[in-house]
Image (cartoon, rainbow, N blue to C red; front, side, top):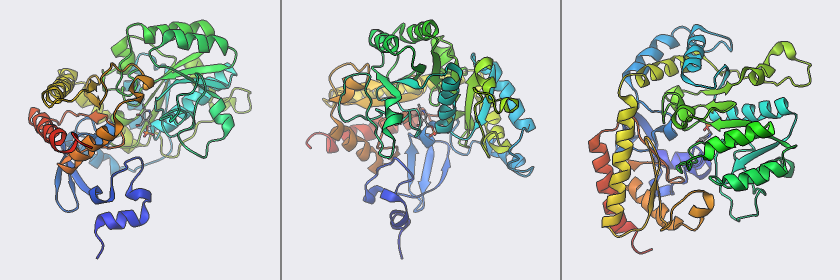
Length: 427
Ligand SMILES: Cc1ncc(COP(=O)(O)O)c(C=O)c1O
């Protein structure tokens, strides 16, 4: 009789749902989650530090979401049309997100970004997009250019991290160094007649923007008639209720959301300027700038209901203070443990996010992290996993939720100490 892990390896490439890269012997199959704990099919408990890649910000099976969804599913799960739930959600998003004059729903961050880029190209009549080296903007053809480049090419040349992408799609993406306003200005100015948009993760993976960087991008984009897109798939409703645009005080032309907003249910949102979003109006079909935007399940009432329940919890007083305190205690604890155990590393992140990079110098972009000790990072993450911390070993990003407790952080730090001692010293 095969185990669930063997059955998974028989059918899923690398036994993985996508970008997990666990060795065969560590592959588990999950059966349930509650709060910050998940259980596999053998009943083994893990403390979850990935939380559905950040899509479950309230904690697994949060009673407010469970109850709201339970009531909603009985009313029909999808109409591919406006519902009371999606309308109410759109109104709440317009209140919460500074740039959201108009919005449309789809089903994921990947889709939302593809639409935002298409909108920017249609609006400006230009083809190129400037992104920052090492940024992820979903599995679309912009997101995978220079996501994990193996060679440090001369900017703005990009390298596809995935095969199967036409050279023309790669050539349409200009790659710039994050946090380098001068370098970005030079690239944008040189290509000003071709660039439709600058797309940025305001918090680049876990690397914070240096003072003035995002405001500088805002100014530069406005000056050159280029649209500024904030990919808020991670930062949205996580760094602040109004996302990174509220947190950093910089308003983009377009912003995309997903992950935390849906409370674990599929959702994607493109929000932004009315004159740009209105290009998707179907009464413009046939016009030169009309943009096709369609999603069979986007804005479905079950996801919208889960999102409304999530937002109601996030609006409670003290929520963000609590999320930030958890994140600070995890990051500060990690700094101490690493130092006490004699490891040189950088602990990055903000709000309820953290990442550990084994390098002795400050990280401001992809290149400053490029020579970090990646085998050690992998040994560390796999060691944590082996000892009952559920995380994604392909990325060092750790996600906290409102369900995490000080005890969860203490447990994580104790496991981190053991892992550093036993798995990371000699490789
Ligand atoms: C910054 C960022 N943008 C976009 C995405 C893609 O979102 P999704 O997985 O919902 O397609 C991710 C996913 O990790 C992300 O981190």
